Image (tube, rainbow, N blue to C red; front, side, top):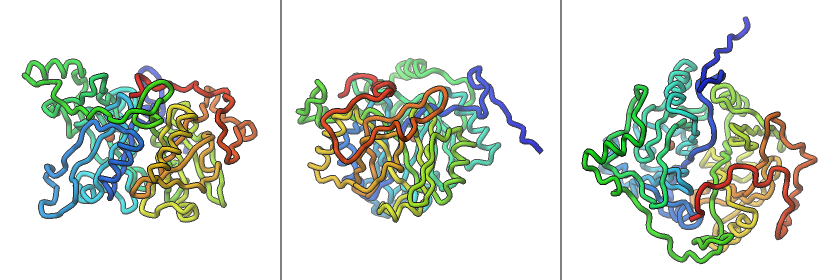
Length: 406
Ligand SMILES: [Fe+2]
């Protein structure tokens, strides 16, 4: 019997699913070493605090246990309220509304879709497809409307629309506006954010009373013309690399259920690795068989192979490595190019918990015909890092960072 392919009208375009992932919006880790993690991601990598969420106020929070700092930290590099979250693992392990599988230290892998309707329809679709759903609604802080599901290995994938934008005055929305949060599927349509702000003012809420980060001190690095506290600027997050039990099972989930497209696969020491994209960049998700984890010498406490952070330029990448090494950060040197096709110069740093952070400045862009660059046409990286590089056909063609660097 031939399968009937259902089609969904998404903004006037027929798609196989009622939503389309546009990009990685944010990502997070649950960590044991929270103060050290805040220093690593904040002071060293330069993510800025947008808000903190105190879990000791939650009904499920164990009152007698000493779990350390009970707060989760929301951080950003651009105008999205958060691009990275750092949550306390010991607290998260008690959480009633989310269950993390034993080796899953990824708090969430979060994808931006195109509209609120896509999110609501995605929830219905996941129910129909029997994808395990965690929750649906709208969380504060961050204001994004979302649905959360689990992949076959237990990684939380979130789909969202409409994350809060933070502008020149660095202010987050005040807690008094959190009454517009939702713990259930919202009825459509909803009022716009502009209408929410107007309503808050009518209620007498001081809309400028939200969190504002401390101004940076010691901004003495000249980053291509602007003084910043470190010699580089994060300009994008992702890709996300996952160690999975069964690559084919995970690949089927990310392609069939979520709509990712396979860009490339590689074989390393007999292990098949798959690289999937949601937009024009070579890959946003990479799937690696779990047996590679030990072979590569990665921490066995986590199924995260790597979390990518792009910096603004090749020059910044070189400076970032020097800066991080100067602050005692450990780097992993044994990652072969088969494990990161589409990225040329890259470095892998370890966070205090042992999570691997992939620093890079360029990713191959894939055009209308879906073809990746042939291996023979790719830049050869031989361990030498020259002062400057020749451009490729797709150098500096992806979307530039929006707004000032700091
Ligand atoms: Fe999220």
